[in-house]
Image: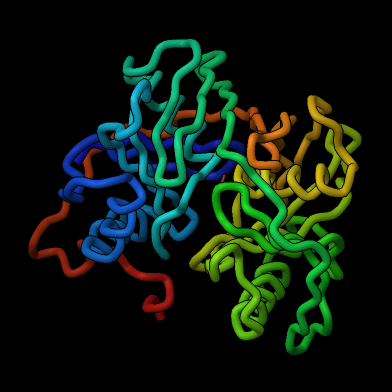
Length: 314
Ligand code: PYC
């Protein structure tokens, strides 16, 4: 199985070029459901130790369903499929350019939540026009055991997010362990309280937001991804959800620039235009770098060929 590894603003992507499982026909959303339901071993084998690690996101290259798309892509992490993934879209574009399969210019990628537009500006710099983001519920308060009441917005940016407006733990990389514990407790509290996205959808990403210590950024975040790893990048879909909330509060105008910083200090530059359904269509600009090209081996006699799942490690 041929793969190209990259990182986008610090967050890793593994692009699977061939030999993925047969996902049958139907929409990319249906194929994404089948990917984890029927082929969880493939997903974990590709991403988890000993070949990868828990923060890695996979991008499975497929033929597109939608017309005029250059590629179809299903994103997945060790816990399951993702709807969209901003950092992995940037990583996929840079990796495809690296192997001569994408030329500079504007292309469309088909994803399980709809087509996105990808502008390959240089070999490393990419802008993604995401699917429409929107705020679903403002000012939701949830009681988090051991932490007290927490207020935030529920928003969609290609995945479901709960975004807090302030954070009782400093948003600095030295605090990643307590930030992870707090976000995990918050995610569990939301589920217990029955607070969901539209149509009862699970909120599987937590985004703690606050001011940035840097003069170059407008805000900083810490994003907990499904499975418990944190996003090293500012999270493309999470940044889109953030812009939807800013726009809904009248705090950011169409076309105005917003620089979102991650917990490790990397940034995306964003702006939005009003979306056709009343939300925002964001453009996310960031850089990715190829880190490796490889062939993954899955030897039948290898006891760890399907990966070491984080919770089974000890
Ligand atoms: O960039 O959208 C993103 C993302 C989602 C999960 C990890 N990264």
